[in-house]
Length: 377
Length: 263
Image (cartoon, rainbow over all chains, first blue to last red; front, side, top):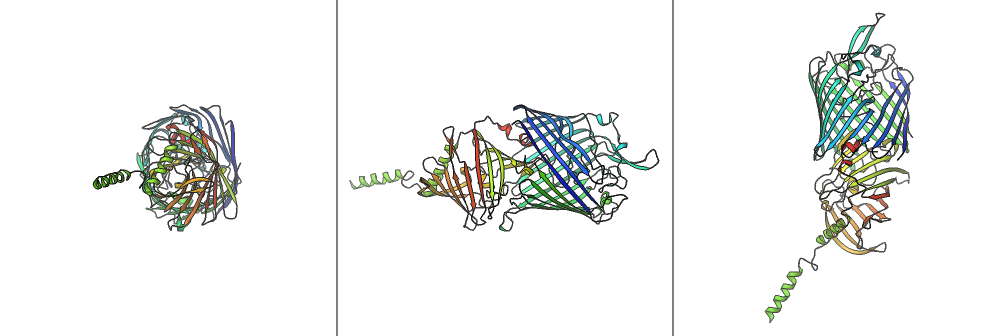
């Protein structure tokens, strides 16, 4: 195939509907971003992929950033494959909360849903067998989470200062992280089991004073061991999905699980439109005083409308309700293509009745609309 | 004498019952489907490029290019992998399907932006394949066991002697059709035309095929498939190119590992 090049350039505008909760936060933001991907196969067994990303944000300097999402050599044989370099790997099954996904660090400044990830340096061996697939990961270099700067929205009352990052391991970001995963596809289900040992991707945020005596919030990355399970199961018209984990090393050991269903109504009202209904629940038993999460005991519901038209139009409406504090987050995502090479995304999120006891409280005034236009080349 | 003649006559008619004379229309329909299936057996694997042209009733066009890899599975339905090259916003999106003679197919979707493999529900056979006029059940591996058959007549279609027969989906509840009317040429058992009737028994779509070519001296594949939806005025054309047979694909080219590296 030789050399292939793909990419996109996008423009994004965000409008916040309420006055900011914290000083210096923006009321609107504009940014441009680009992705460039190069792919070359040397022969049937060896290929090189480079995927670079950069965003320039008009107001939040922490959101202006770049990343090598992928920079990897893939070597393929009939019996195994080996990836060396930066890559992205997703583990998980559910739609709302991605509990067990752990290989890559979250590019938090990119999107509130945490689905954008930083490239992770790794040596990744995959051995597919009749009875399932075994994967081993050796990760020699840790990537720090990105956080919005002082002007950014979706941040803690104090912006996180990544110049003062601390690690539990004396090797700091050079700790050798390891993971082993087994996954298999049965007639009606897909199951994955893994063990991860290394640097936690989610840091504890600690309070301190800098040299000038000003208060700062800094990330502290601990060493953890985590076992995880993900499951997808088909039963007639129903899809059942579940994830579970057990983690040691961050305050007390804890378990967490999320599970739910997806049911699709085809040919809505005799049209080509499909309506998917999603219901999920998450429970997380972590020490919320040490490592807070928004998703500790929450119920989620979603509707996904696929219009099945030429422009691949979709509308997704989702609601997340905290069962303890009754806080509710509503998210709407609408998307369609314009012509052959342009996609238009319109998102909105609303934070309703957010309790001051809820870790989501710092987002309480961050209701927003977001319009994104992506041009693919 | 009389009794001898009667015996002979009865004997002859008894003998003939299971054979040519009184083969029922259902048996003949099934026999034609099985013969067409038998002639397609043994291809082992093939790859092909497909261009999908969607047209709405105002004549606006949109194109998708898709690469297909298919592996024959002896005793069961085929395994297939479809990879999207365009539109560019879905480039790298891939479908993996294990079709089965009986029961629902297994299907997975790979989303390259999220690096995520999702199991998909294949029970909904009537859903549109990527916004086209082809439903999943139209592009799925056409296993004999998925339909019941009835031969109707023989007639000329585009200068060729054809069997015309009806087929009824076994999974009536989840199919979009009550029946299909199929024109199959008598010489090579190629499907030349299909009419699809919806749940209200009215004509929904017509598929016509053209530019058949023979590969390995045995396997016929159409160069063009044209589906018209009579109720919406929309149409989809599939142009098939670069058919290659027996390329050496194996089971390892049709699992979640290969799905994630599909390109």
